[in-house]
Length: 189
Ligand SMILES: Cc1cc2nc3c(=O)[nH]c(=O)nc-3n(C[C@H](O)[C@H](O)[C@H](O)COP(=O)(O)O)c2cc1C
Image (cartoon, rainbow, N blue to C red):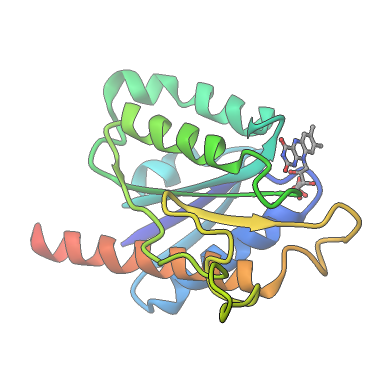
């Protein structure tokens, strides 16, 4: 099976999150993995060959970054043919505020996947960091269900932000997508 992480990052923070998602895919041991930066030339044939596409971008002005939105619109000729139907999809986003309206970005990514007839996989982790005994080091510290969220302080470079908890959360999304894709593929054999 092949799984592609398809992402945009303006300043490198979401690229760190994308790399962590990819590590999770690779951790499964079963998948060929592919990292696709939509600001570069897009290998459409490789996306077509992939069994799962994991979409990610920063939240800019409360939604997907314009560069990623362009990729979404550029995919419309595939949409017309439903060329990605029944592939697995999942999503992640990063922004500077704890909320920052990241949910709206994940909702856009999931609607995009639904328009393509894809099968959306959520994060599958209970919320962390939501009790007096909990901590900001918890997995899913931002309490997302639809996909993986990360938060990067505005005054920190990608070497420091997003923090380890968010990268580990991203890794779990990659692993989950690989596990579910594998399960679905062996059920369809
Ligand atoms: C044009 C623009 C719009 C932004 N809008 C938001 C926003 O709506 N919510 C938020 O929390 N952060 C917002 N930010 C902050 C970015 O999401 C944040 O800096 C993020 O880490 C950038 O990721 P990147 O380094 O992958 O580009 C915005 C940044 C830019 C440049």
